[in-house]
Length: 72
Image (cartoon, rainbow, N blue to C red; front, side, top):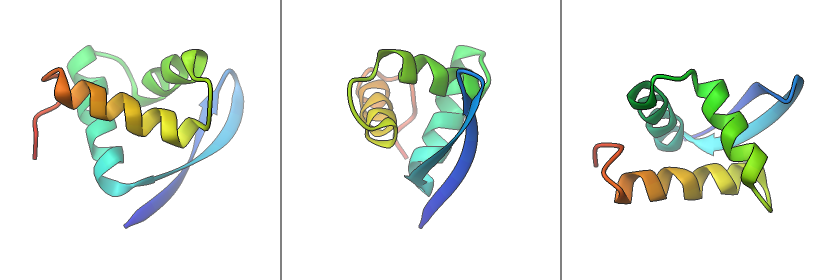
């Protein structure tokens, strides 16, 4: 199921649409790194070159491949 959430990025509310498994993986990754989900999203936003939702999906995939997020 796709979920749309509003997050603060650089102090501005931004809408992000991701499938629920990606939201869950973002929460797990943020917890593993000891940062809030919003901080993790801001970090990805600061280095992205394209769409934020796509950048978050790629970031989660890379983290799973690196073993930072358990494979469900």
